[in-house]
Length: 334
Image (cartoon, rainbow, N blue to C red; front, side, top):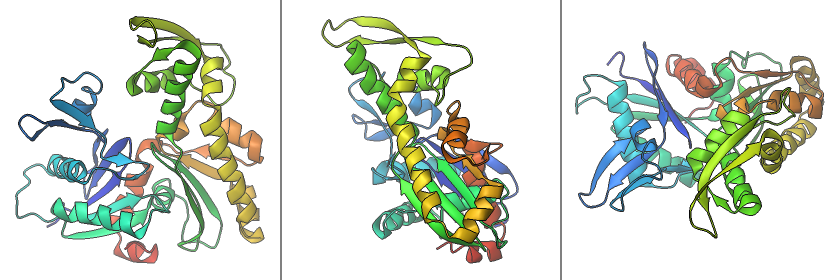
């Protein structure tokens, strides 16, 4: 059926769905809330995220995806079904959409099979899996079919995917299990060690978004962090500075920088010259950390561009492949 085909970025932090002829129709957190008393799903996406850390004992909010792969098959299937129905108003049980799904570049065949099986159970008629950095490169408009080196770094919630693409093929690819979630966890652990304060992942994410950075800010900033004191057991507020948060984020940021440097060392000389001229492009939610592009520019000496819409680059690229069967085959989607 025309208009039924879907492209999906099944991310650790967010899931985006692109519908043929309609564009990006779903962009919601990858979270499912289960009611264990009634054995049913209570909420999915944004509604479920609002429940994180605030649910009674019989309601559990879970993330079906961890480090870019499926951690809870039942929850993933339920989430996919919910988002497919939301993307296709008037969805009927006989509809079988064709799906192109973005996955991390280095997941195992078993993990690929798990994604495919979940999509089939979510009523897909045909499933094509495409590496996320390839989809992101197409989504940001890189000339992936030309004989030039294109370097893309997609920093998601669970993974950072680095790829060099030329002539519709991947010359180098690496998937590093460091991303936005690692940054949030680094802030949680820092608060425990430094302030004896226990905070949730939503508060850690708020700290990262408000004052997190990879380089010193032009103007110093602070943020009031709310949590529970570990020894006193009562609520507390601690004021953190941007310098302190930057120190907390040092390890995950350093890991991403090092992985990019290693990629540049392994690229063939001819493509390295192209990358020197053209630079690298950042996409994914994690790339929106303040000053990360400037940090990479200083560390590599290359031009660094941030995608126009980092959060949806992968799903837009997958959507373009969905609409172009020749491109889908040429880029090796399986």
